[in-house]
Amino acid sequence: MSNLQLYLAVGLPIIAVLTSLVISLAQISALREELRSQISAIREDMREIRADMREIRSDIKLLTGKVYELMGQK
Image (cartoon, rainbow, N blue to C red; front, side):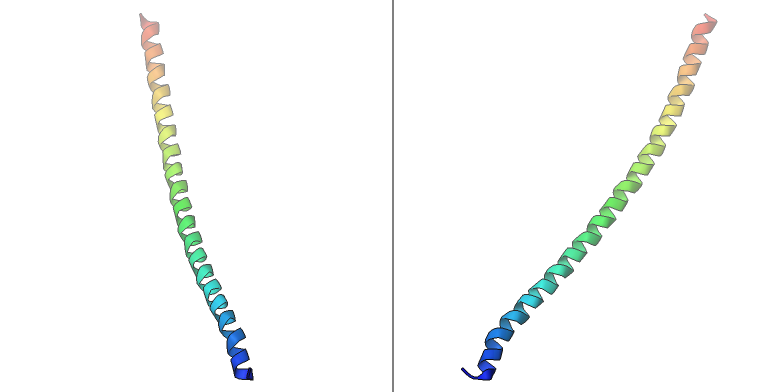
C-alpha cells in the first residue's frame, strides 16, 4: 500500500465524519435559535395574559363592590 492510498484510506473517512459533525452542529444551533424565539414569544404572551387577568380582577372587585353597595341600600 502506498502512502497516498494510506492517506486516502484514513483521511477521507475523517473528513466525512468532520463534515457531518459540522452540519449537525449547524442544525442544532438553528434549532436552539428557533426554540429561543418560541420561548420568547410564549413569555410575551404570558405577560399579556397576566396584564389581562389583573384588569379582569380589578373589574370584578369593582363590580363586587357595587353589588355589596346595592345590597346595603335595600
